[in-house]
Each structure stands twice: as structure tokens, then as C-alpha cells.
Amino acid sequence: MRESATQLREQRLQTLFDDCQQHVLAQIIGPFGLSTAMFQDKTGGNVTTAHNFAQGTTATDDDQARYARFRQSADEFDRASYAASTTDWQRKRDSAAQSGVDGYTGKPLSEDFDLDHVIPLKAVATDPRAHLALGEVKDGAASVDKIKTLLNDDANLVGTDASLNRSKSDKDAQEWARANKAGQDDKTNAEHYEVDPKRMDEAYRTASDKINATIDTSLLKKQTGELLTTGLDQAARMAVRQALGLLLTELVNGLFNEFKVLIKRGVEAGKTLFQEIRERLGRVIQTVAAKLPDAMGQLLGGGVSGFMSNLLTFLINSFITTAKRIVTALREVLLGLYRAFKLIAMRPAHMTPREAMQAALKILATVVATTVGVLLEESVSAFMLTIPLLKPFADVVSPVLVGIVSGLLSAYLAYQIDSAFDRQARDEKLLDELMADAQRRSGFAEELRALCDASLRNVEQYAQAMQGYADIGAAYGQAGQTSALTLASLEHTNAQTREQVRRSHEGVASIEHRQQQIDAFLNHL
View 1 (cartoon, helix red, strand yellow):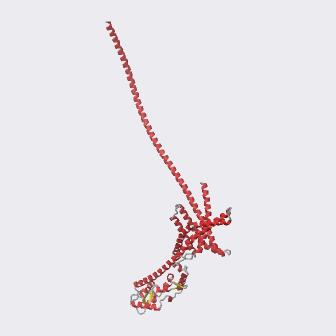
View 2 (cartoon, one colour):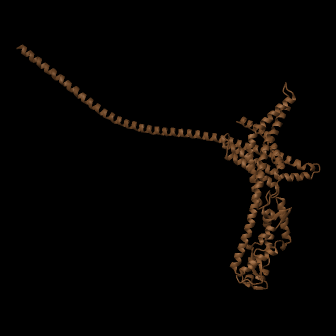
View 3 (cartoon, helix red, strand yellow):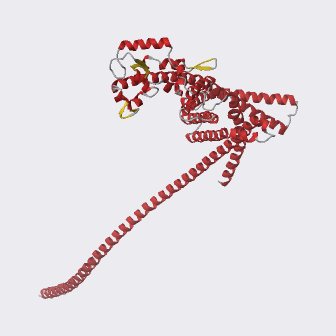
């Protein structure tokens, strides 16, 4: 048992050394190699969310132009930029005059009336969501024409008394109605201007629904299109990265192993160095070609993880802004989770559930190591920039250095997982042996108990037999006494019989004597 455990440890150490080479190459080629070349991850992700836009974090140049226009309106609001043209405004005013009813009070509309924006121009003009959803970019500059059209829609305009409109100004209609009239603490604006609450609420709801629905629909359409475009792009890039990463890792490993053997053993007798190299390269190419089916299989996993990471990044950035390293880490995490889940849910036929779980844990360990490496890469690069000799090479060396460390950490974690499963297997084997021994002991105890029961039954039967023997002895004793009495009686009877026989003989003799005397007498006569 000790010898097998030692052999297993040596085997695990050799596996660790081999895995170190595999993991280091995979990390340098994959997350820290091809990803750097193929992906340009950005803070906030590939699609601008409303949360990020409000903070100035944008994914595209067009969104940056929209943000610049939003800041311009927020910093110095220009009402004229959002007001309707004179001709259009007069047409809308004439339409309100034809109704003849004040939109807020319900009274007849006076000749001195104004058209009021129920939702003020400034409220929407300084709303980042409106600029993100409706801003149109032309020649690098964002236009607010769509926002202007929405604000001056009939649903947001109400004809009302001029003095009421000037009092309301750019205030929210409902807040203005609840506020006290300037200089009159005993009356609200609604009471002073005799506003009909139902009319004002209805006008406010109609305007809000129109503006919010337009902004929400436009934003949904914009972000959905961008999510599909960027998601498919990420899926394609990630699929290619996975396939290329697998083939390149196999190629580099094959070249490394073949030339290591070549250096160790030298050129085979009868061959030239060129022939030896050509044969070894041929074997490497065959090995890489044999991995093509596996590379094709990697396409799906890479594509799914690329698309889902793009979507997940968008969802997260709807609430918090993620750094670009987080975006990279999310892609690697989702890829690892997909591979681990696939391994467990669709377990290969040659694997037991235990082996599938072990392999899945090793994948997750690699995900952890890669994620740590991705998050530390920028710090390592920044540190190297502080060293004059390394500064020119920081961008090139830091991914390789972090890839090596991540690969070594991945291999070590995989080794620890294998060791833990081995210990668990040994513990389970020992437990099985203990359980088998316990079962054997239980069987022995059961047999011993049965033997004891049989012995007790024998003792009980022996006791019953002894009691029977005692009863028989007593019966024999009584029979002996009876026999003794019978013998005495028989002896007495025998004595009497002998006496009687003696007397009978004497009587017969006396009779015979008498008969002789008679015969003699008779003969004498």
C-alpha cells in the first residue's frame, strides 16, 4: 500500500510537470496572447448603457459625440435649440385656439393664452437617456432634432392662460401645482389659478407616456441592434480564438517535445539531420491535424461564451461601470463555466461521474487562475513601466509573464485537485475495507450469537434431560422398593411353598408307607 502511494505521488508530480508546460503555453497563446490581439476590450463593454452614458463612459465615437451634446445642454441650456420653428409653433397654437378650452383649468381659453410644454424642454434636454436614444450623429456631431420633435409633439403641448404658463415656466407640472403661490402662503398654484387636477394629471400622464415610450423604444432598438452586432462579432472572435488556441498549443507542444527528444537522443543512425527534422515535423503536423475535430468542437463553446459575455457585460453595466479587465475576465469566466457545465451535463462515455466532476473542477481552477492573471496584468504592466530597462517592453513582456504565472498556478491547482481526489479515493477504499471488515465482524458476531443460542438451548435440554433422569431415578427407587417388598413376599411365599412341599412329601411318604403296610397285610393274608 505504501509503495503504491509513493508511485502515485511520483506519477502526480510527473503529471504536474507536464501540465505546467501545457497550461503555460495555453495561457500565453490564449487569454494573454490571442485575446490581446483579437479583442479590444473597453471600460463599460461594447454597448453604451444609460448608466455609463450619464458618467461619460461610451463604447463608440458616435456615443461620445452624443455625450458631448448632452453635456453642452446640461452645462448651459439653450432653449432655442429645442423650441419649435415659428411656422410650426403658430400652426400648433391655431389648433389649440380652435379647441377653445384651457388644457389645465377647463375654462374657456382666453385670447391671451400660451402653448405650454407639459414636460418642460429643459427636463428632457438635460436627460442623458434622451440624448443616447434620440441623438443623431452627422459628421462627428450629434443633432437634437429628434428630441426637439418629441418635445414639441402635440401630446406634450397644452393651451393655457399666459400668466399660468409664465408662473409654471420650466417647472414640473405636478410639482408646480402642489407648490405655494409666490407671495401667498395660504394658496397653492393650483388653487390660485383654479387648475382642474384631473385635467392636469391627464395632460401630464399623456405627455409622460409619449416621451418615455419614445425614448424607451428608441433606446431599446439602438441597444438591441448593437448587442446583436457586437455579440455576434465577439462570438466569432472567441470561436476563432478557441480553435486557433487549441491548434497552436498543440503545435508548440509538439515542436517542443520533438526537438527535446532530438537534442537528447541525437540523429538516428543512417539519417541526416534534415531527414530527422522533416520526420519529426511530419509527426507534429499529423498530431495537429488530429486535433482539428476538437478545434471544431471548441468553436461552439467559444461562440456561446463570447456572445453571452457581451450580453452579461451589458447587463452589469446597466448598474455599475466595469473596467476593461473585468470585461476580459467575464469572457474567460463564462467560457470556463460553459466548458465545466458541458462536461458534467453531457459527460463523455469514457468518463465516470467522479472523473467528470474532477475534470470540471480543474477547468474552474484554471478559470480562477486566468481571472486573477487578467485582473493583475494591468498592475504588472504599470509596475514594469516604472523600471527604465523594462519600460519599452512592458506591453509585450507583461502578458507573457502573467501568462506564465497563471499557467503555473493553473497546473498547481489541478495537481492539488487530483491529489485531493486521490486522497478521497484512498479514504473511500479504506472506508470500504473497514465497512467490509465490520460486515465480516457482524457476521461472526451473528454466528456467535446463533451458537450461543444453540448452546443455551442445549443446556436447557440437558437440564430437562437431567430432570427426566432424576424423575426416572425416583421411579426406579420406588420400583426398587416395590421389588424388594415383592422379593421379600416371594421369598416368604417360597419358604411357605417349600414347607408345604416338604409336608406334602412327608404326607406322600406316609401314605406310601401305609400303602405298603396295607399291601403287606393283604399279601400276608
